[in-house]
Image (tube, rainbow, N blue to C red):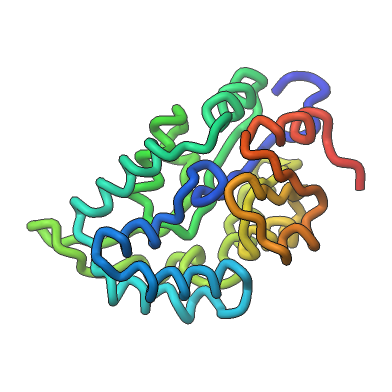
Length: 222
């Protein structure tokens, strides 16, 4: 890490932070279930419904096969937030570890991470299970990221490993990383959520993710 850099680790949410879409809503569009699934996603992201209450329910309705999830990964890359590549690249050049913590689906988030030149061990998301023919079988019910409080658990583990951490995200579940001890930047460049703007240590509304770099490279006063 470059001398003087305030953080050893920066953690990003995926949906509506690194990419302009919400993955589960995109899958719902593919399956003609947009309205039903979007209402559940919005309720969870705004903190009106606990994540674990909707996670299994959405997947039971969608039952996404392997091909659908791979298409989602392609859409993630097509809809990268402006400045995402440059932001991750800048952190890499400075020797700052960048990770993704997401309640999204691991195969699709990993495709996005690869496009950003992140390693598999820098990706934390929910694994899916498929049959040999690609049919959806289930998800990793043991994953902390499939329930409320999971991002706090994963972020805490990473802070213990790497040290001082900043986190960037758009949703109420991302505020859990602030609770874990990360300096938190709310990102409203795709969608602005009132609870996040109100509770985040800092909030960025610009549509380009590079707007967070000054805060990441200079640090955030308490």
